[in-house]
Length: 134
Image (cartoon, rainbow, N blue to C red; front, side, top):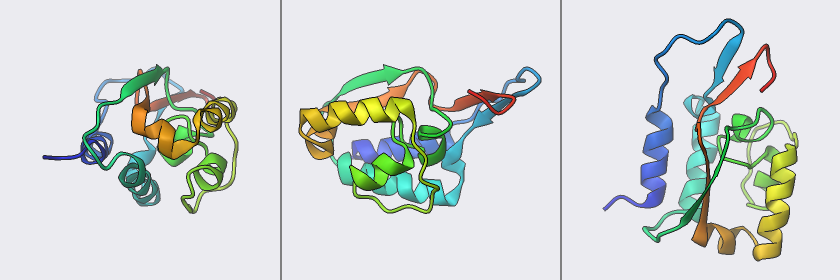
């Protein structure tokens, strides 16, 4: 039986949008990049390598300095390293939503405890930018 991690990795690596977008709108699909796919898989194997039920917390869409870089919802490169203990090749940028989310995660007891019970995702798992801004 595939784990939650296996299912998430498969979903994010195969999702696509096949509709025309308005002029100036671009899709952020970081999971197609090998460096992101590797870090994403490491994160999911670390925190979701089981079939335990979780409560989903759904946001709008990935931010360009958080999930748009790391591929991990509400997780910027700084939180990925400092809170989750996962090394990465990304430039250390911060995302305001990640700042807030990881304050909550920290108060809850840390990433291991939090991710055993919760899963962050987004209404749209892919991000969108309009003229470089989302």
